[in-house]
Amino acid sequence: MRRSSLITALATAVAMSLVMVLAAPAAAWKVFEGEHGFHARFGPSMSTDVRGLVIGDRLGGDNPRLTVGLVGLLPQMEFNIVGRSIGCGGMPSEGNRVFKVNAMANAHGDWFGTRILAEWGSTALRSVWINWGDGAACQRSLNFEEIKVNIAASDNGEGGLALTKEGAGTLIMLLEKRPNDQARLNIVVGGLDGNDELRIRLVNRQCGKTPTNTLVSDTLTDILISGFRTTTVPLTQDELDSIRSMRVTNLSDNNKWDCGPVSMLIGLFIP
Image 1: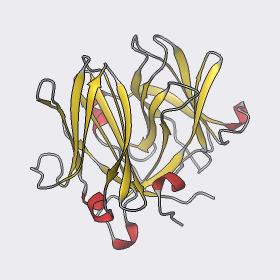
Image 2: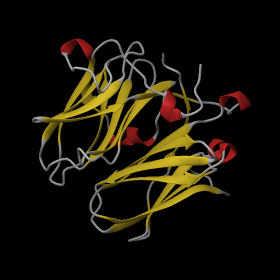
Image 3: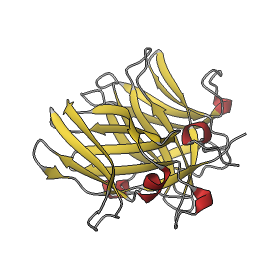
Image 4: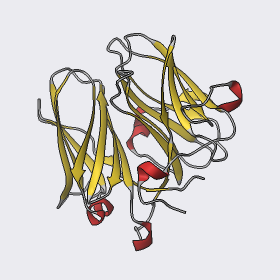
């Protein structure tokens, strides 16, 4: 059963513990793939400065991948990302841990990375936790299913994911359908020179083809090395279903980044 909104629907997962085995090369950062995945959005909060996106997808078969963009951490801080089978109000334990990845923030308090994980099994994942020292932040994990072929009338998209990497700069985008022809656009970006201005366009043509229509456009200004932005944009169902790629231009130096294919998502109902 599907719900009408990605945010009220999603949450993939995992009954068995996922183990980090290696870091994927930068070239693998171009497409979110696989029939099923999950995401957790760490947005602005009164209790913590940590913001960003944690996304799980599959490279095919038994190759789940974790892609992360986090900002607002303390410089050089060691932390871990833990997926659990409990909600954020539950008590963490070894018994409800689904996967764990250890990391260290850079000198600016950011961490952008990707990890290949061991196979995940069932739909046990309920939440994603960021733990550091005596602090923690938790967000509900939301499942998605990717629409791989032509979108049928019964399979209206409920969101989209895209990622692009240019040199040291990385940008991850999550688009979530909202009622009344609206959508929530979430963008986390890092690795820039400072005081950058980026223009993001979601367009109707795949990478390598000239777009004829821009469905969503947004500009990020005064980015100090890294940043997280969430905003509401007008977007009809037909427009969402027409999105095929993300184009990024750094207006500070007129440098066009690599095109990022957009994976169209639908929500899955999780009991």
